[in-house]
Length: 197
Image (cartoon, rainbow, N blue to C red; front, side):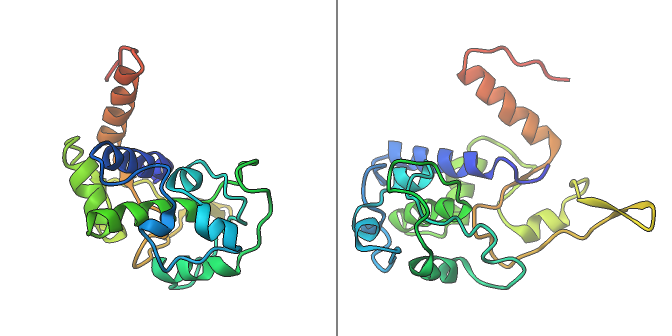
């Protein structure tokens, strides 16, 4: 299953990390990412982990900044200083994958480990999701992973998936069994009874 739920995984990883007292939602991200410079001094000083996870910084999302280049996550974060603001701070939602990158990197720095390791150790392994990956290379080696298709010369054909050295926003890919388990977990947390095949 593709990474459509990556935002949830980033949010849950940060939440579990926050529950342990390592990361606080309302800390300015600069506490964890002291070199991060945002488009203006107010954002640089005041934007919090919560602001990035709830998309309320007002920064232009630039969600495709790294496609199809080989720009690293660190370089994307460095380039955030050049983005324009498109909405007032904390007043309007402006969806941003890069915002998840900022929140994920803040959590990783607080834990003193790469985000992928944090994701693996804090979320994927404890939830026993063996068909969920945290790196593009792993997904490429998995059997039965959904791939994009397109009609080319009047015929449906598989289009090779984009593979990056490092995901800008958390790259989580799940095969169907783990996706069903993840939905069941959310239903249990919400008080619903899950039905499995």
